[in-house]
Length: 435
RNA sequence: GGAGGCGUGGCCGAGUGGUCGAAGGCAGCGGUUUUGAAAACCGCCGAGGGUUUACGCCCUCCGAAGGUUCGAAUCCUUUCGCCUCCGCCA
Image 1 (cartoon, rainbow, N blue to C red):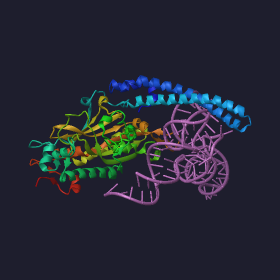
Image 2 (cartoon, rainbow, N blue to C red):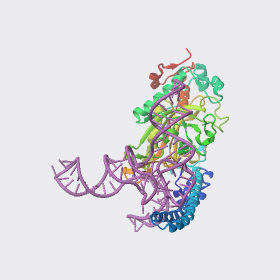
Image 3 (cartoon, rainbow, N blue to C red):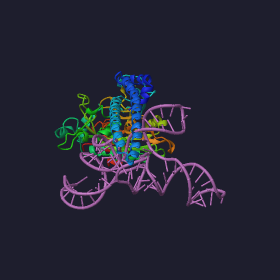
Image 4 (cartoon, rainbow, N blue to C red):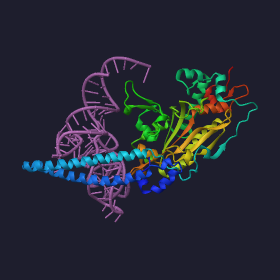
């Protein structure tokens, strides 16, 4: 959420920045600026009345002790009116604030100044590449053919259980999923200093509001109700990413400055309804309703949040480097930036079976956008007024897509797959094959 | 699921309708004292919002939301969380 005061005081600047995303992003800004100004007047008006009521009530406390019952009764009648006026103003103010917040919650974050211009995916900027495209003296297969032939991947039975966009792993396929997860968590906790978290996979709407998935993107989520209940206020949602529970761990908290940066990593399943992606990636594991992801989340001081993004991106890249998987880093242009992000790097791994780079991680700095929604603050220098922290997160990595990349980049002519060196201790074998 | 209890400032804890944002203690911060430290003593010490160049002043908040009342931390309703006992259960 943007700061309503900042929007009101810097309307043109905010509009210019949001227009870099899209015309729609800047739409309600004037209304918000107006609401913000009107709110200040309403607050002043309300407080004058409240002060009058408070003063009168103190008099009443004295009158109540005096023997003059008539004076007390008369004054009480007067105060009834005043009290009613106060209540009316308070109601008006809270409705006004609710209205303003509702508008504000639908406004995306401002792109960082360094973010390149551009309307969409095609205008993202390649920042660097690592490694080389593997070459094959045979035609590279895609992972779904490889996986099914190796007996480690089964879409048909998954469809029987759950329908489209689900998968079943088997044997060394399952082992590979587990190996990748453990390898990533070990790397981030031991070498990068992250604390491992195992969060709930079902969360309240308030958590999703904190990180920005709600109220705007409900259609992307799986929503659950207790048996017999249709009450939306107690609905729980399956998490679309660990970002949600892990970032909201500190909602409504004031962190100690000396504890920053706080760094968490979490392996969780992620659930996405993929509404509106019909026809996209219908085959294979790329786009599933359920997948595992190791997430990195950091809470940092505002001064160095963009440096911290470079570090966090580096932590995610390290996974690919250690696995020996060729990839590239792209910086998202303003038009392709997610709703909450100020700046984002995507890591795209090379998939020979599809002859394409595919997103395997997305690392973003949200500045104070999520922190304002979730009320996550810290006390600078250990004293004084609390300030909003900056939040960052990135996939480190999407396990399912890493699984794909290992199969496709490490495939052999006979349809077997060589296990990357670093995974062998976790896999107990150096090869996945049918024999 | 049944019965009961509890939610107050960073922590502990008083407060059951009137001047209470809230006693007291601990922790923390600043100072006096001391060669230094400890102890003792004095002061400061929640958040949000409005207003002000600033000092400050004002408003709101005692798990949350409603209600009663001239007035609510205190009474009522609903709700959430935690604890104890019973039931069920991985």
